[in-house]
Amino acid sequence: MKNHIVEQLKKQIENFESQAKTEKVGKVLEIGDGVARISGLSDAMASEMLEFSDGTVAVALNLEEDQVGAMILGDYKGIKEGDEVKSTGKILSIPVTEKMIGRVINPLGKAIDGKEEIKADKFYPIEKVAPGVIERKSVHQPVQTGIKAIDAMIPVGRGQRELIIGDRQTGKTAIAIDTIINQKGQDMICIYVAIGQKESKISRIVAELEKNGAMDHTIVIVAGASDPAAFSFISPYSGAAIGEYFMDQGKDVLVVYDDLSKHAWAYRQISLILKRPPGREAYPGDIFYLHSRLLERSAKLDEKFGGGSITALPIIETQAGDVSAYIPTNVISITDGQIYLEADLFYKGLRPALNVGLSVSRVGSSAQIKAMKKVAGKLRLDLAQFRELEAFAQFGSDLDEKTRAQIERGKRTVEILKQNQYAPMLVENQVSIIYALINGFMDDVAVEKISEWEEGFHKFMKSSKKDVLDKIATQKELTEEIVKDLEKAIKEYKESI
Amino acid sequence: MKISIKQYAQALYEMTLNKSEVESGAIVENFVKELAKNNQLKLMPKIVEKFEQIYNENNGIVVAKVTSASSLDKNHLDRIEKYLADKYRAKKVILNNEIKPEIKGGVVLRVGDDLIDASITNQLRNLKASLEV
Figure 1 (cartoon, rainbow over the protein chains, first blue to last red):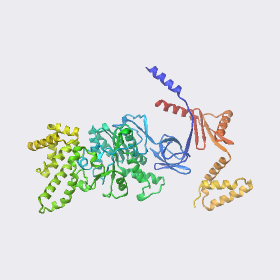
Figure 2 (cartoon, chains in turn cyan, purple):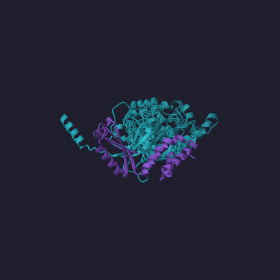
Figure 3 (tube, chains in turn red, yellow):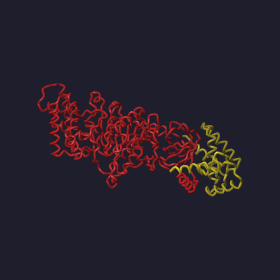
Figure 4 (cartoon, chains in turn cyan, orange):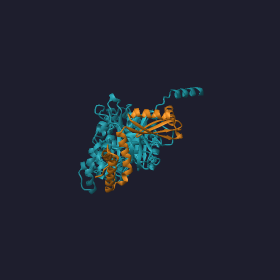
């Protein structure tokens, strides 16, 4: 056996053809803050990968008459002025492989979770032109986030870009993580890109994903707060590249970019050091293009091209609720809708702190299963009307019967839409509880007891009426038969308490 | 208006082209005075470097550095000179031989921005990379 290996090795060495080719080299003129100015390299291309003598990689971003400004991907402390730089002739690419699922990697594809190295055979370019019009198909399959408020009123579809926007500590990451956890068994590969996040927060997230069994279908890409800005800059594109590897195989991918505000900061830092002229809020002129080219790579492909999809959930952090600031308005205009989280609602106890009025999904009900469409159709409008009337309710003045009923129903709707973190709900359970709500089965339950009622209901359904839930899950529609069974089940539960 | 090193060197080259030694001397003196007036005397070394580059380019002179593990004999040096003259269509080749035992064998040729690494260390590195695949 050993002999065979030795023979093979000997053959490989014999067949090795040594070639000395002419390479272009340059010399480092100036280095600092993650950027190197290099002289020479007369034929460097834009975004070409350059290599330093110690193996560190850089990307040529500024091509000037007699020097090249390059962004260093990695630790630049080992590089000094006068060092030699070689051009590789390749555009920046990262290794991609199935083996990345369940791992935590850095934006260059290297494993950083302490487990074994990841060897890949394919390389995907970090920058790529998004699929064109002909290759796409309209979004028509749902992404079940597991969060009642979102799946009912602001549904997300496979191939859509839905922005999660809000102030700090309003639950943006929580929504993304709950969505990822809920993708278990949904035939979806999830990629969570942590951009410039605290390492402690990231380790908590990974631990939570592991606890809920979500790492079996998730890849975590980390560009931490202490990593160079260059890593934060390319990490979302790395996420998109890995997503495209799976999409090209016809699979469905969910990518969470947490968050793009820090991504914009990292790009601003690099642009300022490269002496590119600063514009509004000191951001470079192409800050819109930075995000638009990233988010355009999310798509639903036509069957002829594999039928895969990438759904994007970018996250933006606003300052003091200002959605009309530069970066938030940019990203809002790019995405197909937004989930707007408000701090006031959060502290009032409404979690998830969704502002249903300002949130929208431009894909809408084409991303819902028929059953959900039926029950949730009027939910949004009813909730909006309730909000208008809520002020009256506070007065406690004399109201007519219809108004009072609307207010009571609205209060119960709000209670039902509250949900705990790390408790995503399957769509059949969502459909059943919303059906109970809109058909008046809860009107006789006190508002404070609604969540208790709901918990008991779900337990009851799971233990004694699992067949009804399964029917909803498989048929995805509320047929007459299912409606009958469901109503019977609800009545049974009500009698049992 | 800021004048670049390249522009200074280019100007100096064009002014002293085909001039006699005496005339060139006067031109250079005026040039240095002009530099001093603009407070750009510190650029002198870089201008000289750039001037040399422009001069070599225009006169078909190629400056090359060959690094080897041990010093090369005249035969080898001549062959390398001829190779470079062919490759760069040069009329004259100035070859410097640098000794660096770390490369273990072979040669490393450096001409301006171009690098041809035919050293043993590089070959071994390439072999290792090809075996890892």
